[in-house]
Length: 98
Image 1 (cartoon, one colour):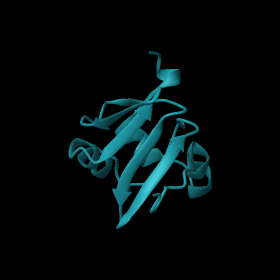
Image 2 (cartoon, one colour):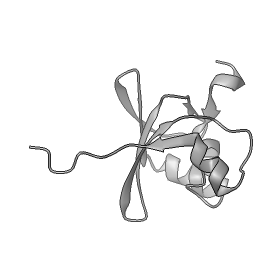
Image 3 (tube, helix red, strand yellow):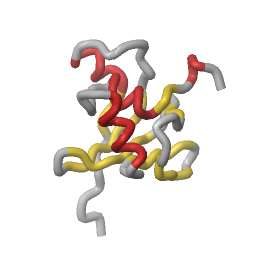
Image 4 (cartoon, helix red, strand yellow):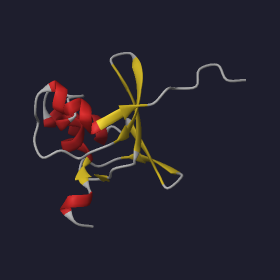
C-alpha cells in the first residue's frame, strides 16, 4: 500500500472536516465508533492509523445523526469546507425498510 492510495482514518476524518482536531478524530476512532465497508466486508475501525481508500464506505454517528459517506478522495491538506466536501459523497440511509 503506497501513501497515494490510502490515508489514515483519523487524518481523513479531520481533512474532511468531520472533526475540529485530529486528536478528536483519533479518539472517536479508538472508541470503535466508525464502521468501514470495503469489498463487501464491513469492519469496525479500532485504531487511528487504520487506512481508508477511495471507494470505502464509512458509517458513524455524529452530533445525534448517522453519517454515511463514500470516500471520493484522500486530500493533501485540511482545506476550506468547499474543498473538504470533495473528499466524500453522502449515502442515503435506509430507514424503516421492511
